[in-house]
Length: 139
Ligand code: HEM
Image (cartoon, rainbow, N blue to C red; front, top):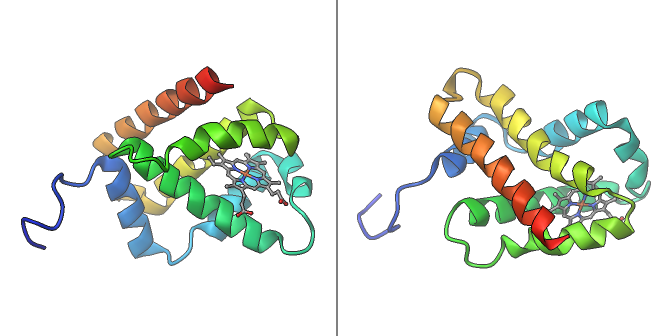
């Protein structure tokens, strides 16, 4: 670590992903297990062949978009608006699309357990509200 490495200190959203990464190498199985438990209809939406690749890539891109949305807003956050529209085509209604962000939050919360701080919880609550407004405004 040195002073020039990054201008701002990491925000609570970033910290939550960093803590999760130190506890689990791959969030993908945890996130999709939770998604399929909470929204069983989503399992059949993914293709039967090669769905792991698509699921892994969808999660990685979503996390990139979340980090950008919560941070510098350089551009990756725009994926959220684009994908609301294209997921309409996959038969994913907006409420379900938004629910994916809550599934990610809940996965992190369970993984972090006692490291899930009030600051992290508040930042995620606000993030979900902001993403809902952002996706709603563009739909
Ligand atoms: C529960 C909510 C969601 C469901 C059920 C869902 C469903 C799907 C499905 C079925 C595909 C694959 C289509 C195919 O087979 O080609 C897909 C791809 C994708 N989704 Fe989602 N999605 C959800 C939420 C999101 C969110 C919130 C984002 C990002 C903001 C996102 C980003 C993407 C991207 C980028 C791809 C393309 C992945 C690739 O092929 O590289 N999805 N989604």
